[in-house]
Length: 136
Image (cartoon, rainbow, N blue to C red; front, side, top):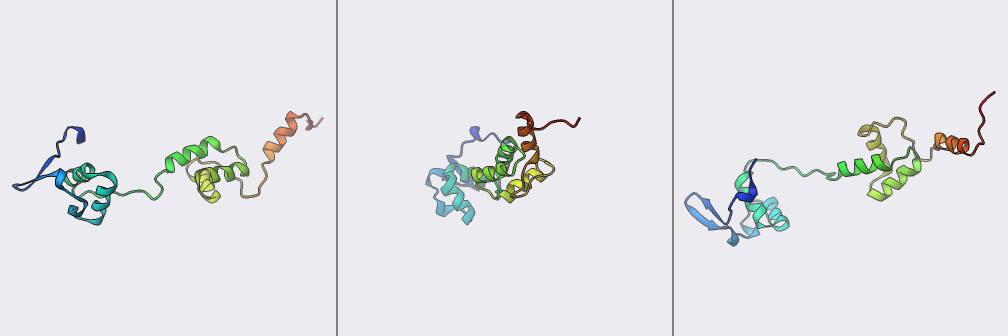
């Protein structure tokens, strides 16, 4: 792994040509993506990428926060359809997305569909209230 903290990029060499990196602008970047990186992340990051990551493909995920969202769903899901709706609203995704994460990433069986009641929760509430009796 490259220790980027110890690398001096104040002067860069292109063959025998010496360039001070402070004189570089976004217009000096070789591609539109590198120009965007220069503008978003700064000169230092763009120069380091050009010097040390040549030929690499950097892919930025379309769902960059999926791990955080999955953890939030795992923490807040209480096996009710209402919690799915609340979770979706809180993290800015669809209820379908929450259900898919529950099924595929968290491996919850029997994820309720929209409008489905949670009978287990109702049964436990009644039982706690003493309204459900055992068969004798």
